[in-house]
Length: 306
Ligand SMILES: [Zn+2]
Ligand SMILES: [Zn+2]
Image (cartoon, rainbow, N blue to C red; front, side):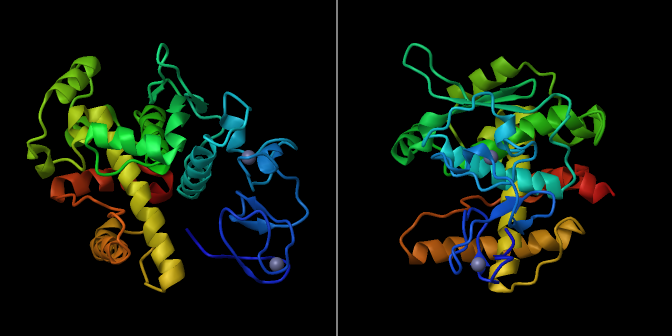
Protein backbone atom coordinates (compact mmCIF):
# COMPACT_ATOMS: atom_id res chain seq x y z
CA UNK A 1 0.00 0.00 0.00
CA UNK A 2 1.12 3.55 -0.69
CA UNK A 3 1.18 6.46 1.73
CA UNK A 4 -1.61 9.00 1.66
CA UNK A 5 -1.90 12.56 2.92
CA UNK A 6 -4.96 14.63 3.74
CA UNK A 7 -5.79 16.92 0.78
CA UNK A 8 -6.94 19.59 3.24
CA UNK A 9 -4.10 19.75 5.79
CA UNK A 10 -1.39 17.38 4.57
CA UNK A 11 -1.75 15.09 7.60
CA UNK A 12 -0.93 11.41 7.29
CA UNK A 13 -3.78 9.19 6.09
CA UNK A 14 -4.12 5.44 5.80
CA UNK A 15 -6.08 3.51 3.17
CA UNK A 16 -8.95 2.62 5.52
CA UNK A 17 -9.40 6.02 7.20
CA UNK A 18 -12.79 7.76 7.15
CA UNK A 19 -11.44 11.08 8.36
CA UNK A 20 -8.16 12.88 8.82
CA UNK A 21 -6.50 12.24 12.17
CA UNK A 22 -5.03 15.75 12.14
CA UNK A 23 -7.81 18.11 10.97
CA UNK A 24 -10.75 15.71 11.52
CA UNK A 25 -12.15 16.43 8.08
CA UNK A 26 -14.26 13.71 6.45
CA UNK A 27 -12.44 12.27 3.46
CA UNK A 28 -13.18 9.68 0.81
CA UNK A 29 -10.91 7.36 -1.09
CA UNK A 30 -11.41 7.75 -4.81
CA UNK A 31 -10.42 4.58 -6.75
CA UNK A 32 -9.85 6.25 -10.16
CA UNK A 33 -7.29 8.70 -8.76
CA UNK A 34 -5.98 6.34 -6.02
CA UNK A 35 -6.11 9.18 -3.51
CA UNK A 36 -8.26 10.85 -0.88
CA UNK A 37 -10.67 13.55 -1.96
CA UNK A 38 -13.03 15.98 -0.22
CA UNK A 39 -16.50 17.02 -1.38
CA UNK A 40 -17.41 13.76 -3.08
CA UNK A 41 -20.40 11.48 -2.47
CA UNK A 42 -19.64 8.65 -0.07
CA UNK A 43 -20.69 5.04 -0.44
CA UNK A 44 -23.92 4.19 1.43
CA UNK A 45 -21.95 1.74 3.56
CA UNK A 46 -19.78 4.53 4.95
CA UNK A 47 -21.95 4.91 8.05
CA UNK A 48 -22.64 1.20 8.47
CA UNK A 49 -20.55 -1.19 10.56
CA UNK A 50 -18.59 -1.93 7.37
CA UNK A 51 -17.23 1.65 7.42
CA UNK A 52 -16.57 1.85 3.69
CA UNK A 53 -14.54 4.98 2.97
CA UNK A 54 -14.78 4.77 -0.82
CA UNK A 55 -16.36 7.32 -3.10
CA UNK A 56 -19.72 6.27 -4.58
CA UNK A 57 -19.53 5.86 -8.32
CA UNK A 58 -23.26 5.92 -9.00
CA UNK A 59 -24.39 8.30 -6.24
CA UNK A 60 -25.07 5.31 -3.98
CA UNK A 61 -22.48 2.60 -3.77
CA UNK A 62 -18.79 2.36 -4.40
CA UNK A 63 -17.30 -0.03 -6.93
CA UNK A 64 -16.51 -2.55 -4.19
CA UNK A 65 -19.87 -2.60 -2.37
CA UNK A 66 -21.68 -2.54 -5.73
CA UNK A 67 -20.34 -6.05 -6.42
CA UNK A 68 -22.11 -7.56 -3.38
CA UNK A 69 -25.15 -9.77 -3.88
CA UNK A 70 -26.54 -8.68 -0.51
CA UNK A 71 -26.48 -5.08 0.66
CA UNK A 72 -27.05 -6.08 4.30
CA UNK A 73 -24.00 -4.89 6.23
CA UNK A 74 -22.57 -6.90 9.12
CA UNK A 75 -19.59 -6.85 11.45
CA UNK A 76 -18.59 -10.31 10.22
CA UNK A 77 -18.45 -9.05 6.63
CA UNK A 78 -16.33 -6.02 7.51
CA UNK A 79 -12.91 -7.77 7.35
CA UNK A 80 -13.81 -9.23 3.95
CA UNK A 81 -14.98 -5.84 2.67
CA UNK A 82 -11.67 -4.33 3.75
CA UNK A 83 -9.84 -7.16 1.99
CA UNK A 84 -11.95 -6.66 -1.15
CA UNK A 85 -11.27 -2.92 -1.32
CA UNK A 86 -7.55 -3.48 -0.85
CA UNK A 87 -7.42 -6.08 -3.60
CA UNK A 88 -9.71 -4.15 -5.96
CA UNK A 89 -7.28 -1.24 -5.73
CA UNK A 90 -4.49 -3.58 -6.84
CA UNK A 91 -6.55 -5.03 -9.68
CA UNK A 92 -7.44 -1.55 -10.95
CA UNK A 93 -3.79 -0.52 -10.83
CA UNK A 94 -2.81 -3.67 -12.71
CA UNK A 95 -5.36 -2.80 -15.43
CA UNK A 96 -7.80 -5.65 -14.65
CA UNK A 97 -11.36 -4.82 -15.72
CA UNK A 98 -13.74 -5.32 -12.77
CA UNK A 99 -16.92 -3.70 -14.03
CA UNK A 100 -18.30 -5.28 -17.17
CA UNK A 101 -16.04 -8.33 -16.96
CA UNK A 102 -17.07 -11.69 -18.39
CA UNK A 103 -18.10 -13.49 -16.23
CA UNK A 104 -19.60 -10.70 -14.17
CA UNK A 105 -17.89 -10.53 -10.78
CA UNK A 106 -20.15 -10.80 -7.72
CA UNK A 107 -19.55 -11.49 -4.02
CA UNK A 108 -22.00 -13.61 -2.07
CA UNK A 109 -20.97 -13.17 1.56
CA UNK A 110 -23.06 -15.01 4.12
CA UNK A 111 -23.13 -17.37 7.09
CA UNK A 112 -24.40 -20.91 6.94
CA UNK A 113 -26.10 -23.19 9.42
CA UNK A 114 -25.07 -26.72 10.42
CA UNK A 115 -27.75 -28.01 8.03
CA UNK A 116 -26.82 -25.62 5.24
CA UNK A 117 -23.09 -24.81 5.53
CA UNK A 118 -21.45 -22.24 3.28
CA UNK A 119 -18.58 -23.49 1.14
CA UNK A 120 -16.07 -20.85 0.13
CA UNK A 121 -15.43 -20.84 -3.56
CA UNK A 122 -15.98 -19.39 -7.00
CA UNK A 123 -18.49 -20.42 -9.64
CA UNK A 124 -18.99 -18.52 -12.88
CA UNK A 125 -18.10 -15.09 -11.48
CA UNK A 126 -19.79 -15.50 -8.09
CA UNK A 127 -17.42 -15.65 -5.14
CA UNK A 128 -18.96 -17.21 -2.05
CA UNK A 129 -17.50 -16.26 1.31
CA UNK A 130 -18.36 -17.82 4.66
CA UNK A 131 -18.35 -14.70 6.83
CA UNK A 132 -18.23 -16.82 10.01
CA UNK A 133 -14.47 -16.58 9.41
CA UNK A 134 -14.73 -12.83 9.97
CA UNK A 135 -14.48 -13.88 13.62
CA UNK A 136 -10.80 -14.54 14.42
CA UNK A 137 -11.39 -17.42 16.86
CA UNK A 138 -13.55 -19.27 14.34
CA UNK A 139 -10.98 -18.67 11.60
CA UNK A 140 -8.22 -20.09 13.81
CA UNK A 141 -10.29 -23.21 14.50
CA UNK A 142 -10.68 -23.81 10.76
CA UNK A 143 -7.04 -22.99 10.05
CA UNK A 144 -5.86 -25.53 12.62
CA UNK A 145 -8.28 -28.19 11.40
CA UNK A 146 -7.13 -27.67 7.80
CA UNK A 147 -3.44 -27.62 8.87
CA UNK A 148 -2.87 -24.39 6.97
CA UNK A 149 0.00 -22.04 7.88
CA UNK A 150 -1.91 -18.95 6.75
CA UNK A 151 -5.63 -18.17 6.69
CA UNK A 152 -6.97 -14.61 6.55
CA UNK A 153 -9.91 -12.75 4.97
CA UNK A 154 -7.40 -11.10 2.64
CA UNK A 155 -6.03 -14.50 1.64
CA UNK A 156 -9.52 -15.80 0.92
CA UNK A 157 -10.47 -12.78 -1.17
CA UNK A 158 -7.26 -12.85 -3.20
CA UNK A 159 -7.48 -16.61 -3.73
CA UNK A 160 -11.11 -16.56 -4.92
CA UNK A 161 -10.44 -13.56 -7.13
CA UNK A 162 -7.72 -15.71 -8.69
CA UNK A 163 -10.37 -18.23 -9.79
CA UNK A 164 -12.47 -15.45 -11.28
CA UNK A 165 -9.40 -13.92 -12.96
CA UNK A 166 -8.55 -17.28 -14.52
CA UNK A 167 -12.00 -17.54 -16.07
CA UNK A 168 -12.02 -13.95 -17.30
CA UNK A 169 -8.47 -14.15 -18.70
CA UNK A 170 -7.96 -17.60 -20.15
CA UNK A 171 -8.17 -17.33 -23.90
CA UNK A 172 -7.39 -13.58 -23.67
CA UNK A 173 -4.48 -12.68 -21.39
CA UNK A 174 -3.12 -16.19 -21.83
CA UNK A 175 -4.13 -19.25 -23.77
CA UNK A 176 -5.18 -22.65 -22.47
CA UNK A 177 -1.94 -24.15 -23.79
CA UNK A 178 0.26 -21.60 -22.00
CA UNK A 179 -1.70 -22.18 -18.84
CA UNK A 180 -1.36 -25.96 -19.08
CA UNK A 181 2.36 -25.73 -19.72
CA UNK A 182 2.78 -23.81 -16.48
CA UNK A 183 0.12 -25.29 -14.19
CA UNK A 184 -0.96 -28.59 -15.71
CA UNK A 185 -4.16 -29.73 -17.38
CA UNK A 186 -7.23 -28.26 -15.72
CA UNK A 187 -9.49 -30.77 -17.50
CA UNK A 188 -8.55 -33.31 -14.81
CA UNK A 189 -11.62 -33.99 -12.65
CA UNK A 190 -11.86 -31.25 -10.03
CA UNK A 191 -14.04 -33.11 -7.47
CA UNK A 192 -11.78 -36.16 -7.69
CA UNK A 193 -8.68 -34.00 -7.31
CA UNK A 194 -10.03 -32.41 -4.13
CA UNK A 195 -11.15 -35.73 -2.72
CA UNK A 196 -7.66 -37.11 -3.32
CA UNK A 197 -6.09 -34.02 -1.75
CA UNK A 198 -8.07 -34.27 1.48
CA UNK A 199 -7.52 -38.04 1.75
CA UNK A 200 -3.73 -37.68 1.56
CA UNK A 201 -1.25 -37.05 4.34
CA UNK A 202 0.92 -34.00 3.73
CA UNK A 203 4.36 -35.52 3.06
CA UNK A 204 5.85 -32.20 1.91
CA UNK A 205 6.54 -33.43 -1.62
CA UNK A 206 4.51 -30.51 -3.01
CA UNK A 207 7.25 -28.07 -1.92
CA UNK A 208 9.29 -28.64 -5.06
CA UNK A 209 6.65 -27.29 -7.43
CA UNK A 210 3.91 -25.51 -5.52
CA UNK A 211 3.48 -22.48 -3.32
CA UNK A 212 1.29 -24.37 -0.84
CA UNK A 213 -0.02 -27.85 -0.16
CA UNK A 214 -3.48 -26.84 -1.37
CA UNK A 215 -2.03 -25.52 -4.64
CA UNK A 216 -0.95 -29.07 -5.47
CA UNK A 217 -4.56 -30.34 -5.45
CA UNK A 218 -5.58 -29.14 -8.96
CA UNK A 219 -4.26 -26.69 -11.62
CA UNK A 220 -7.13 -24.25 -10.85
CA UNK A 221 -6.14 -24.16 -7.18
CA UNK A 222 -2.49 -23.81 -8.14
CA UNK A 223 -3.38 -20.78 -10.24
CA UNK A 224 -5.57 -19.23 -7.50
CA UNK A 225 -2.88 -19.75 -4.88
CA UNK A 226 -0.20 -18.26 -7.14
CA UNK A 227 -2.51 -15.32 -7.86
CA UNK A 228 -3.03 -14.69 -4.12
CA UNK A 229 0.72 -14.83 -3.54
CA UNK A 230 1.41 -12.39 -6.34
CA UNK A 231 -0.94 -9.84 -4.76
CA UNK A 232 0.36 -10.50 -1.23
CA UNK A 233 3.86 -9.85 -2.50
CA UNK A 234 3.13 -6.78 -4.59
CA UNK A 235 1.09 -5.14 -1.80
CA UNK A 236 3.73 -5.79 0.85
CA UNK A 237 6.56 -4.58 -1.39
CA UNK A 238 4.68 -1.39 -2.15
CA UNK A 239 4.25 -0.85 1.60
CA UNK A 240 7.94 -1.50 2.32
CA UNK A 241 8.83 1.01 -0.34
CA UNK A 242 6.40 3.66 0.94
CA UNK A 243 6.93 3.31 4.66
CA UNK A 244 10.47 2.04 5.09
CA UNK A 245 12.07 3.80 2.17
CA UNK A 246 13.30 0.48 0.82
CA UNK A 247 13.55 1.12 -2.86
CA UNK A 248 11.89 -1.59 -4.84
CA UNK A 249 11.53 -1.46 -8.59
CA UNK A 250 7.94 -1.05 -9.72
CA UNK A 251 6.72 -4.65 -9.60
CA UNK A 252 4.98 -4.34 -12.93
CA UNK A 253 8.24 -3.38 -14.63
CA UNK A 254 10.30 -6.44 -13.92
CA UNK A 255 9.59 -9.44 -11.77
CA UNK A 256 12.98 -11.14 -11.43
CA UNK A 257 14.82 -8.50 -9.43
CA UNK A 258 11.66 -7.66 -7.51
CA UNK A 259 11.38 -11.24 -6.35
CA UNK A 260 14.94 -11.29 -5.03
CA UNK A 261 14.08 -8.28 -2.91
CA UNK A 262 10.90 -10.01 -1.76
CA UNK A 263 12.89 -12.89 -0.27
CA UNK A 264 14.79 -10.37 1.86
CA UNK A 265 11.72 -8.35 2.83
CA UNK A 266 9.68 -11.44 3.71
CA UNK A 267 12.43 -12.84 6.00
CA UNK A 268 12.67 -9.45 7.70
CA UNK A 269 8.89 -9.31 8.00
CA UNK A 270 8.75 -12.75 9.62
CA UNK A 271 11.63 -11.96 11.96
CA UNK A 272 10.02 -8.64 12.97
CA UNK A 273 6.89 -10.53 13.93
CA UNK A 274 8.88 -13.10 15.92
CA UNK A 275 10.38 -10.14 17.80
CA UNK A 276 6.87 -9.37 18.96
CA UNK A 277 5.90 -12.96 19.69
CA UNK A 278 3.62 -13.14 16.68
CA UNK A 279 3.48 -15.85 14.03
CA UNK A 280 5.06 -15.41 10.60
CA UNK A 281 2.96 -13.28 8.24
CA UNK A 282 4.53 -15.06 5.24
CA UNK A 283 5.06 -18.68 6.29
CA UNK A 284 6.07 -19.80 2.80
CA UNK A 285 9.29 -20.37 0.93
CA UNK A 286 8.37 -20.96 -2.70
CA UNK A 287 11.04 -22.66 -4.80
CA UNK A 288 11.91 -21.95 -8.40
CA UNK A 289 8.98 -23.73 -10.06
CA UNK A 290 6.45 -22.08 -7.75
CA UNK A 291 8.04 -18.66 -8.28
CA UNK A 292 7.74 -19.16 -12.04
CA UNK A 293 3.98 -19.58 -11.57
CA UNK A 294 3.78 -16.36 -9.54
CA UNK A 295 5.64 -14.69 -12.41
CA UNK A 296 3.07 -16.15 -14.84
CA UNK A 297 0.40 -14.17 -12.97
CA UNK A 298 2.53 -11.05 -13.19
CA UNK A 299 3.15 -11.46 -16.91
CA UNK A 300 -0.54 -12.03 -17.64
CA UNK A 301 -1.74 -8.74 -16.12
CA UNK A 302 -2.73 -6.01 -18.57
CA UNK A 303 -0.38 -3.56 -16.81
CA UNK A 304 2.57 -5.89 -17.44
CA UNK A 305 1.66 -6.59 -21.04
CA UNK A 306 1.18 -2.92 -22.03
ZN1 LIG B 1 -6.40 16.87 7.45
ZN1 LIG C 1 -18.53 0.90 -0.43
